[in-house]
Length: 205
Image 1 (cartoon, helix red, strand yellow):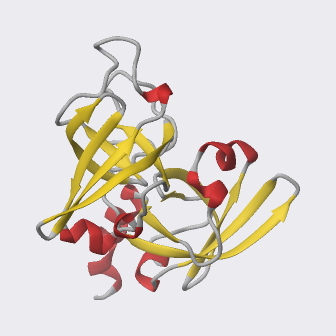
Image 2 (image 1 turned 120 degrees about the vertical axis):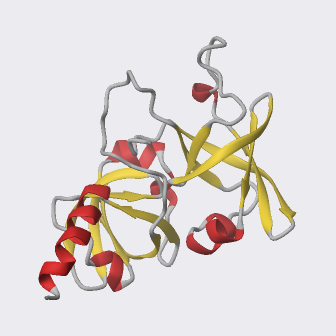
């Protein structure tokens, strides 16, 4: 379980095909390396990379390695990454931690594409084009995870939604470098998904 509060931006150090999947080596930022044994990342840990939960399979100093299978590569933007690209990183939520953001599983529902970027000083309103099935799971003022970042939906249409990005978010996440047409990973609010699923038999009866 994650919160959508990005801990830092890493960099893709290497990409290696492994059978039908892909091995991703990520250079972790200094602030995520920990100052003691209790804080250090360990083998088998869950880490969200651009909002996609993956398992740490190797650690070499500041380089963490992950394996992504065909299902993950088909449903996320991880297969489009290039060496040197920045990625949002968040380690799994400790049981005794303060819960900010919202409940994030790290199970990406699908991808969207940057459709509009409106600048107002240091702030940005960003619009994304999404499949209708994902837009149907969103509501204004509801929660959405974009590339692992917990955000609030501003507007929703049948095929788009928008978010307002403050200067801090733009500075510390990959959303600050997103361009028109870029693909982003999306995870809709888990609570909304369950409520919608429970209501479907009533709405289709």
